[in-house]
Image (cartoon, rainbow, N blue to C red; front, side):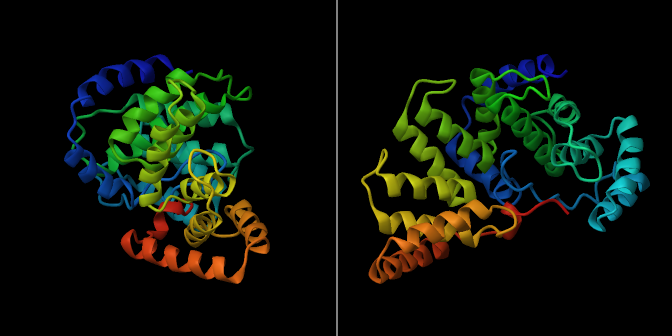
Length: 294
């Protein structure tokens, strides 16, 4: 399995990043916010354009072309050849394919193993931003399995391990890690229960227009948990979440919003739309943040 290498890496690197300045984190967040997605229940991330990377071999080019064309069986064969040569890009793609069941039978054990190989290659001094993005995203994927636990993958639920990995990824501005930390802080999973800190994590992810975080904020305002109950703000957040995803990817967001709108007045809806417009103007959505890999 993976675990030891990743955890050791996280422990060392997390200490190195403890003194990171806010400006440095914000700068890292600029490129990360355009790229990352979240957890197994959410749509997958959009693959970066890696054609210019030196290790983007002919096999990988053929694999990516087949992947984009939907010929996953052909893509898998080329990715596996590149994976045999220890190429982390191939491992990263194979992790997606086995987690989502694209061209293969879904296999969380294999997905976890492939993501683990990429995560174990994490190097805080990596100069290539695209390689670094893949490594950080793989860390998040590994943390996802630890946060939820997976019998199929043979991964026991471990909130402490998940939170430590998420914190490292959050240092790079990964919105999925910020979202996960928000949920964990509010529930006291792997850390002391800190509802207000959890809310700040969710807001950080929402500023990157990360749909699950926006929806989570909508639920908080609708129920009046941690924040004062405000149906208008709840609808605002769900309108924003809907605008950054697609029905086929996260239908629960669409369904939830429809139910909310059925219980609100026209005046509340109009105010929510106005507020959503203001937020969207201040924090424009990047479609790639919530798309599946291509």
